[in-house]
Image 1: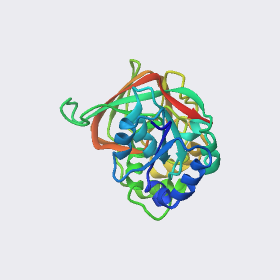
Image 2: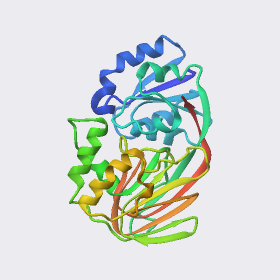
Image 3: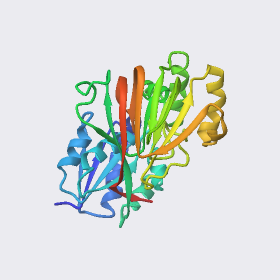
Length: 302
């Protein structure tokens, strides 16, 4: 049994995973020989590979989507999550102090400083029916988005010629004018609010979308999830608030509301797009039950 299993997504970062494969392998090999190195071939592979790995530490080599899949494969086990970030956004690492640099992130694994972080559990349904939507709950480690930001994440999947923050900015502009906000009912630990929200961001981490600090005060180990609710806005007002969101200084905006809690219920008047760690859970979700699992995952941090 190897101590480490490295799960590489060759498509991460618009193909950076495949291009950097040899460099990554050499960086690991120079530090240990006690490892297994495997590649994904399709969506969902990383979850299955992580689930069936017998290693003590399972390392996601990819972006936030790869981290999401690996985490979903090891939550509830004694395995520890490691990350080598080579994705387009790499938002999760901003909350656990990992460097983006390849050599530095590999170095953090040896010997590896381990912390326990919270995990979000989400049951997403359509038409408020338990027989529709996800067949089983999903977990997220960084954040979940409902509405506009999820529609942006969905659009970003179809843009192949740019990456990083520019990718998500382009997706924002391509989504503007097309998205229509439904009416939402949101309950955070029993505190209810109703409005036509542009987006609802549930953050375990501070950043999403490759550089949007929607929940800038979130802490991954405080036993709660941060919720950012942004009211439906005109296109000029969306463009006006975007710079503040990218700096995490939108708390003072009259169009933004923040909540914090352990249990969140969201009901939409019509189907909306929802993402978990940038991975699309569905495009016509009408109800979500979200709960925090306190210190449910061991992670190697920076």
